[in-house]
Length: 122
Image (tube, rainbow, N blue to C red; front, top):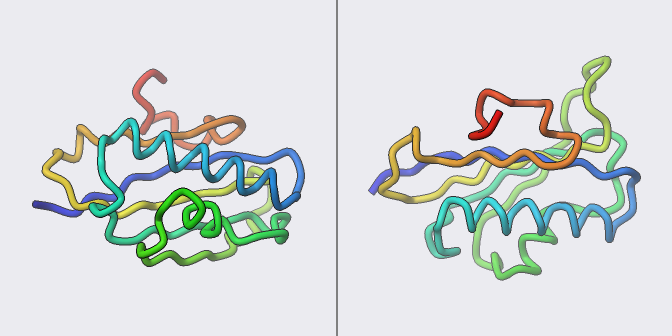
C-alpha cells in the first residue's frame, strides 16, 4: 500500500468560527467520499488558512467528523499580494492502493480557481 496526498481547498465569506468549521467539514467529507477511504487510512492532514482567518483551527472540524486519532496541524499561508482571501487549504495523506492519477483533488467555492489542472471536470 502506498501513501498518496490529496489536495483540497475551499473559501469562506467571512471569518466566523461556524462558517470555517462548516466549510472545512464539507471539504473533508467530499474528499473522503470522492476518494473512498476510511478514517483509519488517513496518516495525517495539514491545513493552511489565509491570514484573514483567525476564529478557529480547521483541524477542529476534522475532529468533529471522527478524525480524533489522525495527526493534524494548522498553519498560516504566506501573505502573497493578490492571493485568494478567506481560503482554507488541506493536504490529506492517505494510505491507499490507488494510482496517483486516480486521486480526486477537491476545490470548492471560490477555491475552484486555484488548481483547475487537478480537478476532473475543468
